[in-house]
Image 1 (spheres, rainbow, N blue to C red):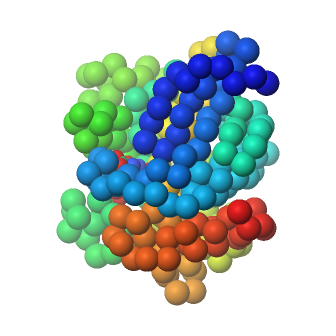
Image 2: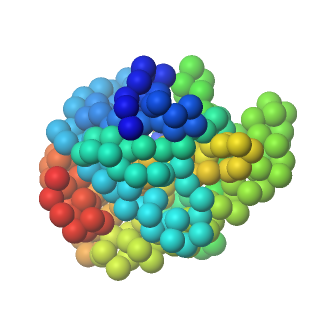
Length: 237
Ligand code: TMP
Ligand code: ASP
């Protein structure tokens, strides 16, 4: 697989063309941003951790019948994927109160949410990714209503697979963000699932093991990412 021209550069990844038009390479960077890129930094070897953790989770999900864009991991920082048109909706699934939910609604942090809450955000940096309702999705024609139903169903199924996976590894899957894409009309789970896009708490101490350590300046950021890699993939970066 030959790497072609760069098609897109985001905050944490670059996307490259390949010699096959329907396949692309995702390159995972160490760059970290928070609060819509107002805070910037580097998390050493984050790209390697996020690539390997995403690979493992995409494989677990594929085995459970979830269709993803994942094809294979090419190197420490590169993953070969199907080329998709990203649906401009960030889907957040919440199992425990935390983050923007707590701020927006004045809730106490760390309370279980049962059944889990699924939220949609409009993927638009200029607007700061605002929370939207399904009616806004329809108003802006961000996705076909059938696709929206499929996204909601997939998000709940993905949560049902990942929650016990992390529990076995002594981690609480507090919440996470998903992105979906269309490939020849078929909905695929895309982007990444990693400590950048999930909240994980250690089941014993409830300490953050994810990007919240960077967002909130909690220290031991690299250590937390390596520990996630160890628990999820059984290895060090
Ligand atoms: P929130 O509580 O800040 O809305 O975040 C919910 C989840 O989504 C959390 O696991 C972190 C993830 N997330 C992203 O992946 N990208 C983002 O830009 C934001 C704001 C959150
Ligand atoms: N990735 C987001 C940004 O910098 C924010 C976050 O993950 O908190 O826009």
